[in-house]
Image 1: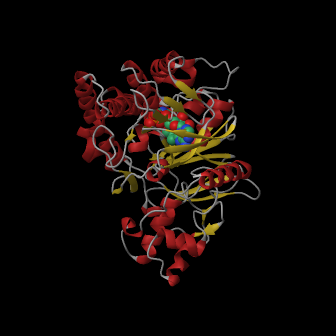
Image 2 (image 1 turned 30 degrees about the vertical axis):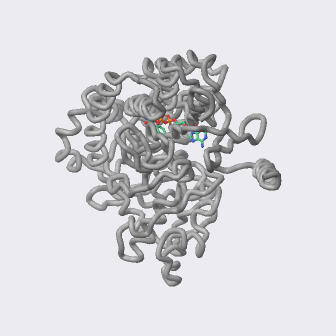
Image 3 (image 1 turned 90 degrees about the vertical axis):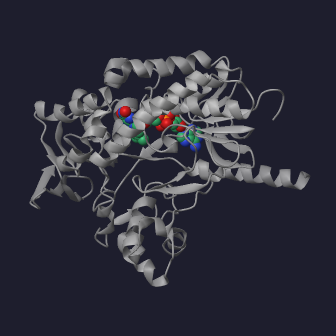
Length: 467
Ligand SMILES: Cc1cc2nc3c(=O)[nH]c(=O)nc-3n(C[C@H](O)[C@H](O)[C@H](O)COP(=O)(O)OP(=O)(O)OC[C@H]3O[C@@H](n4cnc5c(N)ncnc54)[C@H](O)[C@@H]3O)c2cc1C
């Protein structure tokens, strides 16, 4: 701790990071807020580049007011915090975050850390998914929101989760031709959790509206499908799938958006020393934390989707709760009424989120039976068969599989392929996916220019020599 107030670093300027910063400032603490994006807002409230003129209502639909409120909150704080856009944290070690910003490599020392790093697309590979023209759901959205263009014409969206319908709606609304929405989940999965879904209130009503809208706009919606392949010579030409009764279908398209909800971004939490625990519903290893986001070890706090996916409203709540926990831990008197209200709100949202995950479950089992020749790790071109053959070398867990096959060793560091590779390895070994462990978080957590990495290494060596 330096001076009277702690040096707080917040990573992420989405809804969670913004509300955390706002809460700290309201209690006299001025954090450093870092985000790799050029503008604040995070994923859902991503702002278009300067000069783009689509109005908030067109960009964010029902969420326009919330988006504007979150943007205004951070804009209003800019004079009172040390806000660093275009800055990516690529390592955390011993109370220091290593950042790559517009001026190159920098080190940011902190007493307390709030990680509000959000989530990323969850992908289940299938034959042909690496063809040009196949995008993740998030990539499809970024193309539309930040670049004002569509991923193809016509476009098909395939996967499951609320984003599937939302992105289809956003594309159709922006004037793109959407040939079909193909959902791997089906209504029978939603019926048992219907009471939980009803707890979502307005959010559930909006979700239903997005789900029924394509049919009213004449866009075919098929539920309970199984993806078979994306086809094409040099680029995507069609997608093939099986319907619920196992009948084969083929749809011509030049753009295919795929995705199965989203998964938490947890690498920085791991590097910061958080304990990780397996979440059976998300089938992901998540940092352990209490209800307020206080990690079990060190002065680390988790907020927003990075602590487990729960959506943007929960992210705002968790941002406030993490900041309040930090304030309490550093002896700064905080608003207890606010804390109680936020906790109650979070519990309500979490009950709905649980039902939603069950109503539109990610079909993890599909990864287990992929044909041997399917590319799983696209950075290193490692196939499902190679991961299965790794069994001959008896890798007990994912990090050994990585060493033997190079799966997860490329640019994405296993963030995209890791979950599917773990399912394949577990199936080949006949065990549960939690038993094969997870790819350990490694710095740099995201691709870093070689020059920047070299600069950091030289600095580290010079620092070590001077000690
Ligand atoms: C691709 C995608 C699209 C989505 N689209 C929608 C949607 O349309 N509607 C909807 O309701 N929900 C959507 N969601 C879910 C929604 O975005 C989240 O629930 C919500 O944004 C969570 O807020 P957050 O603050 O936790 O994270 P985010 O809003 O994701 O913000 C996290 C921020 O952290 C920054 N960050 C992450 N890692 C680093 C790092 N190492 N260094 C520096 N900065 C970093 C990111 O740039 C980002 O700005 C989407 C999620 C994803 C992944």
